[in-house]
Amino acid sequence: MQTPDYQRLDRAHHLHPFTDFKALGEEGSRIIERAEGVYIHDAEGHRILDGMAGLWCVNLGYGREELVAAATEQLHRLPYYNNFFKTTHPPAVKLAEKLCRLAPAHLNHVFFTGSGSEANDTVLRMVRRYWALKGKPEKQWVIGRENGYHGSTVAGMSLGGMAPMHGQGGPGVPKIAHVRQPYWFGEGRFGEGRPAGQDPEAFGRECAAALEAKIQELGEDQVAAFIAEPVQGAGGAIIPPASYWPAVKAVLAKYDILLVVDEVICGFGRLGEWFGSVHYGLEPDLMPIAKGLSSGYLPIGGVLVGDRVAETLIEEGGEFFHGFTYSGHPACAAVALRNLELMEAEGVVQRVRDDVGPYLAERWAALAGHPLVGEARSLGLIGALELVDPASGERFDSARGVGPLCRDLCFAGGLVMRSVGDTMIISPPLVISHAEIDELMEKARAALDATLARLA
Ligand code: PLP
Image 1 (cartoon, rainbow, N blue to C red):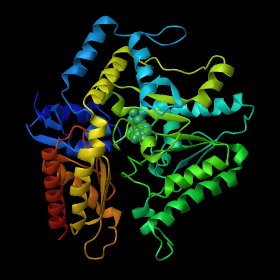
Image 2 (image 1 turned 60 degrees about the vertical axis):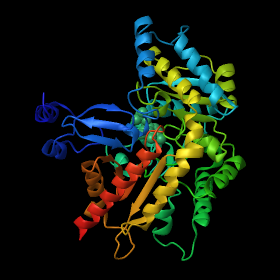
Image 3 (image 1 turned 135 degrees about the vertical axis):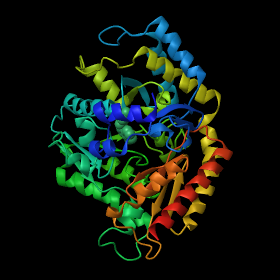
Image 4 (image 1 turned 180 degrees about the vertical axis):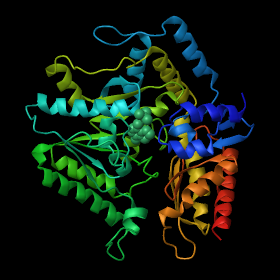
């Protein structure tokens, strides 16, 4: 079959995630056929540098034979068995042990799921169950953040603060509230009614104060947990001001509220540590994980559970009526285990922290000199460019679609960079080389130039 054949069948039968079905039908999909290293190849023979590691997940890059072998071997030996009731299998047990060894010391248990969304559904059930067991069933509210992303199931969508998602599909899960995000460039610098001269650090503290105000409004005895990504991914690679997390920690320490750190993107090396929580010195009670856990080769997620919650669930909980057919699926667990072994053996995380992260940071920061770029930020191997009108230095009217235009020009130029409105983001495979970072930069700059030319 050729591209038009795939496109015809795709249009006729396939509803894509997060897609305007009608618009895609008119435009036609890109057909990605194969990949190796940091490159994907479409059905027309174009080789494209994947600046997004798929969907922030292909941490070890494409075409790793060791992961294929791990899956194949496990599929031959035991393609499926479950972890319900009183059975398990070697890959799930070994992976659980490995994860708890890599995670901060107080996280010693894991509950497996099939995805990040399922991990956050599990979080919600565990948090509320924990407080009920503690004799405080009224502690039910969970506070998330506006523009946070925690998945697309009903619970994931409700915990997340994506207004367009909330706007579709009616009310979500009750007793979930949202507070402002620590997005300096968007809501700090350009937010309505900003006091003149405020700096990002003052803004970071203000966002933490908003959390405290929300806790007081809801009643501290009613609030079960706060959930947040260390760096917001889908919201636009939003790196909080340095003041933010210490101030949030102080607020949470003041009230008896659990901290849930969603590591679905930041986990497994993205920020140059095994977990974003380590980078920011956080001690989460619960830590949802997915994506980079298996480098995206097979679907698997989970929740790492801190001792305080685990002990209560284990000692006082009785049966926990929760689980998925594919919780800890043997082939997925075997691939995840091999993935973590390879990451350790190859020193991938340290390389992000000490080598490619700083290399990318320096090159990326130079893009701030481009007339279209109002801010260039990065941490580890996650980065964002904020597009602004060169004439005014202000943000564009979002209806102009400058970010999506830049994204399309990027793709045409052989680079996947995603746009979140007018924020261009990257999250490349962690194994990217210096030469490939150079190529990414050249292509990003060329796309910015082409975007500017189109606006003229
Ligand atoms: N949490 C975060 C921070 C994510 O970025 C995502 C997905 O992008 C999810 C949860 C949901 O994961 P999944 O798509 O595997 O359900």
